[in-house]
Length: 385
Ligand SMILES: [Zn+2]
Ligand SMILES: [Zn+2]
Image (cartoon, rainbow, N blue to C red):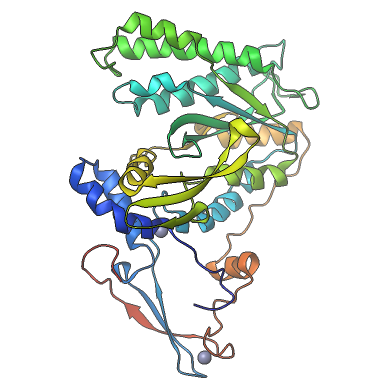
């Protein structure tokens, strides 16, 4: 490893390699969970094959193994995030943006299958924002909304919430841009009540149609009444500035995994230790030690089924009319169309973010590495090597 690369600490892949086999033996996993485990533990190892490079100056041989590309792999998400942010350049409008977070009460996690809640949360949060935006009292216009699902809290427990980025204004039916008041979008207490009402109605119909079920021991009417009394937290973070800041800001949420390598502190034969921020106590940094298998179980809760979209667009950005609506909004704002940002190569990314020239020989620091052939994937127990 080149001394200029950030020194690698414990990685999620190492934790999963040690503890996932025992967990897999004792539990039934969905196919997509199994595939995520296989991908993350094989990422950048001989199991995926790679490329061989040789230094013409000192003869050093450098093996670079392929990455898995799985969206739950923290190693793969840094570049994926940069690429996504670059590709979204043309979507940001030159207006103030607001960040609104909708959370679900934990009482809902008893539902079977609780995965069905993800889609309900998306649609109810977006529809609530659209209700307010369409209301002439607040805006009377169509806003641009991007919503991102997170299912975890800092301790990897189930905590469903969506981060919504909402344009501070919208396009009226007559094609004018209507701006929100500066630094104020919608009243959050009212948002929270409307969201709860919408969600409870959607939940009751999902229960009636059998799309979601309560465990038979729980009486439904009492459980529903208890839910209504719980806190349905909606909060608005301070506005996050214009288009350039907005995309950088959004990128922090779009490609986050339930836990990244940088929070892992250590493991032994029994326990995994990681850092978490205690939001209930002024964001104090604390350390949690979890039995290895419990850690794997918590992590797997946050692996999403293949094809499930965790970033969704609404209002002006809703897929069918996106291009037309954005063009209209730009015209109304008299903004020049934004040229798409060129997607950066891995080499350029490493140079810009890490200050590392990946073409230079890590052994002598002089030669420029030459390609020396493909390394075929090495079949064997996943993750070894
Ligand atoms: Zn990976
Ligand atoms: Zn060399």
